[in-house]
Amino acid sequence: MAKNVIQFGFDSKTANQHKEGTIKAGVATVKVLESWGVKHLYGIPGGSINSLMDALYVEREHIDYIQVRHEEVGAMAASMHAKYTGHIGVCFGSAGPGGTHTLNGLYDAREEHVPVLALIGQFGTAGLNMDTFQEMNQNPIYADVAVYNRQVSTAAQMPHVIDEAIRQAYSKNGVAVVQIPVNLGWEDIPADAWYSAAHSFRRYPKPVLNTVDIAAAVEVLNAAERPLVFAGVGTRGEHQIVMDLCRKIKAPLANTGISFDNFPSDFEALLGSPNRVSTKPSVEVFPEADTVLFVGSNYPFAEVSNLFKNVRKFIQIDIDPAKLGKRHNADVAILGDAGDALRAIYEDVDEREESGWWRANLANVANWNAYVHKLEKKRDGELQLYQIYDAINEHAEEDAIFSVDVGDVTQTSIRHLHMNPKQMWRTSSLFATMGIGIPGALTAKVDFPDRQVWNLAGDGGFNMVMQDLATEVQYHLPIINVVFANKQYGFIKDEQEDTNLGFIGVQFMDIDYAKLAESMGAVGYTIRTIAEVKDVFDQAMKDVAQGRAVLIDAKISGDRPLPAEMLELDPRVSTPEQIADFRRRYEAEDLEPLSHYLCEEGLESTVARIEQGGF
Image (cartoon, rainbow, N blue to C red; front, side, top):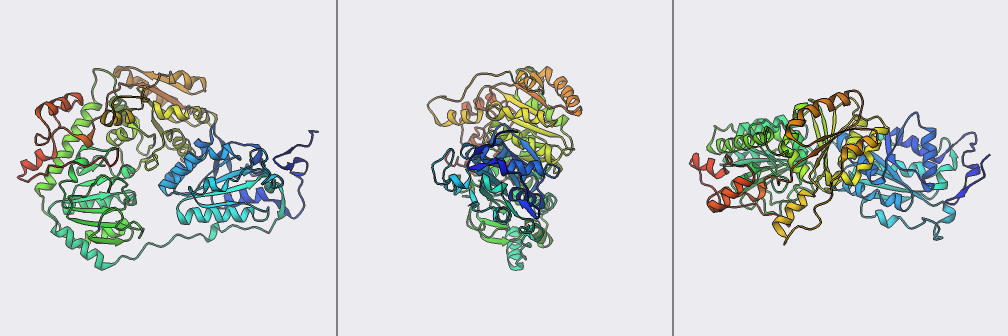
């Protein structure tokens, strides 16, 4: 027999001896997780979390443990799980470094207001406050990131604290952290001494709409000359009423990047998102609009970019009273569900005849889409990211799921993925942490095993988490990983071009990502020319169909995507030389400013730009 091991303040000799009528506190804790519908959790074991590992071993038929290569990946996967499903994500780490590694993913969840539970190991109670190995006061570490942050004191309270943590994470849409001294999970508690509140959990009902507010919004929209709808993530699942209202009142539709997948990309009035991660039509429209219907959004660049400075009337719809009036003075504020409020407005608002404002914006959208498609369909010259997106669009299934990393790939995915509301697109939209691509793809494939899953990442973001490509292989997850490799942090390089004296710290050595993939047991491909794109993607789909994880290393050019927030197209604000240089650099010979189409309709155009908001 193995010798007794006293580690992290606990004697393992009695760890698994079980008394009749009792249950191990750790097992009870895992059963609480199961009662809340938790199917899997992510983490790396360690001495200070091993009582949880024992409990997971006991309950292995009911809950899946997924071994990641880095606790940050586990926490980001838990956060992305919550974004994809609305269900709480769970991760864990051992005391000290194991726990602190989770912070990046936990902050992502905090910024996105999604429920995540982090279980953090701790030295056994006999060694607490003794400055023993990896023993420290961990509570302050998580004080900022968590809506609920506790250390368990006794074995009996352990399942109750976990139950409380989950309720708090759900009710406050945030992160709950529970630190567990390792010995407590191995202690016996009465088998009937714990319970779960999962069956009692209820969400708040939708607020009852105030008819006076609805009438006020209708009055403002009826009087608007240049109405604009700006839809956020609160409209997810309500794309049809948004589009119906836009068509009825002849208002083009801007949307936030986070709600990118909510609307079909072929909607004729879809402008896209403003500011840095932007499309040209959306950047141009805000200085020209006189009325904005701001629905289901907490757009974080609004004040710092003075996005609404030219707007005369502002209507806001939000289900959270704390958001009303937060980003701009609201002439009309409506507390309620976005879909319910939009349907109420739709019923009463006047149907508007086609206007010059509507036609000008539709023409501007069509002009932009022609530009985007021209880049994607290029078949000569150097390989660019655009032709890779063309192949992705061709091979993406109707209900495909995209996990998109942070950087140029975020911006270009919004421009070049042609999506429909059956598909899903998630990223780190507010915390904007690089490396979110693989973790998101991992959990997407675990959560939706029958759906096609893509990880789209620049080489900068991929480098941060590429070790967890092995996790895809280990768990037989046929994910399509596309690495846009141009040996640079492209998004940051673009910023330095605009604001700095020169480039520093934004370029790095190339890596053979296909060989890296093969070394981990995945299928690896390298694309260097446009001519190779189709055959590689066709073969990659066959590999995925056979259950293989695939990585496509696309060696793209270092071209900067068109900076829509810094257009040089309007002769009233740019010289002929500036316009010519801009068109040449970004292959934009046929791109026209919105002012061109407004002029064709006999409408005046404002000479204004959206400010950059601190970048």
